[in-house]
Length: 233
Image (tube, rainbow, N blue to C red; front, top):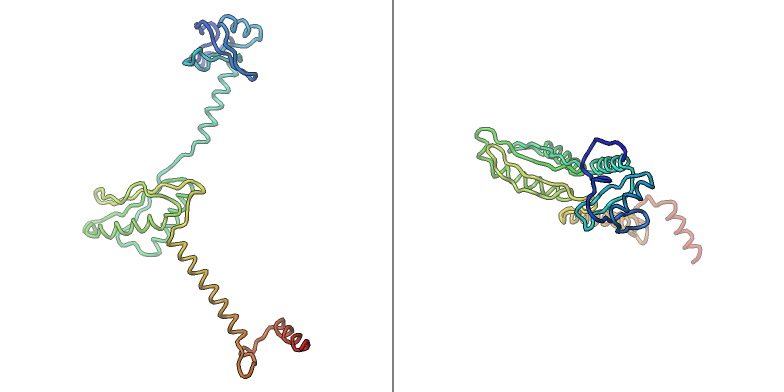
């Protein structure tokens, strides 16, 4: 075994004292006497490393121990890098927050949730403003509803001293759905645009005074089409 004093987490070579082991490799696995496995490891110029001591029999690999430790350290580092660090972002309201301030904070909350962070929104009651706690609760519930596409409520508004807070967690990527309210609004907007387009088209083509167009601004294309129709007749 190559000299390595960094860890005693794994048993190596003569430290493995069971009668037999299962040796795994690229070509599969084989159960053999531990003494035979040690002889093969010496012939290959590597170590016999026990990687799963609780298996029956314990699982080992033929590998240079220093290389094995390096691979384990690299794998642990990669797994740590993949872990998403979730932060809790706070947004503060007053019991009588104005529309502009509300919209500004709503925008920031959406950004926080899209980044994978949680949002703790709270209303701070100063002095006698605690009398407006119901108003603060309504504000927080409205806030959660406006963020329905981006996050889900983890904790409903709760009063803690002079603060009433609500917790909103981000939705998983690709799971967020449009709220029914927003879908209805978009549908109404689309219908209004289509109705306006049809109205403009009808106004442009509406006949008046014995078939003359009421709209004097006939496009060149429409005029050419009308001329062609008359020539065919």
